Length: 121
Image (cartoon, rainbow, N blue to C red; front, side, top):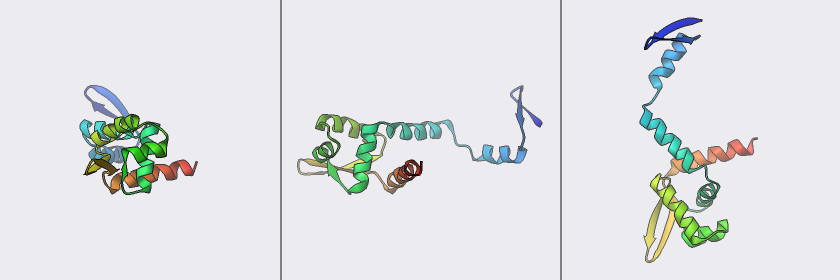
């Protein structure tokens, strides 16, 4: 085992080149905070159901999402606000009706990977 001194602390590692390679690819703290917040936003079962429903259709209004999930318009609106603030969903107003959809294909792909992971368990 090789030793590496960092900030007067002794840090042990086995594969110096692997450590150097991965260290060079690490992102800043803000990136990891934003990534964790994205996963946290998707960690709520109601929000997960909303995303799942939006993966099935291009756009759905609050009332339709509430009917699909079996909860109130108010509860759905609250969760959609969180998803919108995290840039996971976007909205489109048509007259007095607001339709929601996934913000982009990345969200659909990320969610699809999560579904595959759970299905394979």
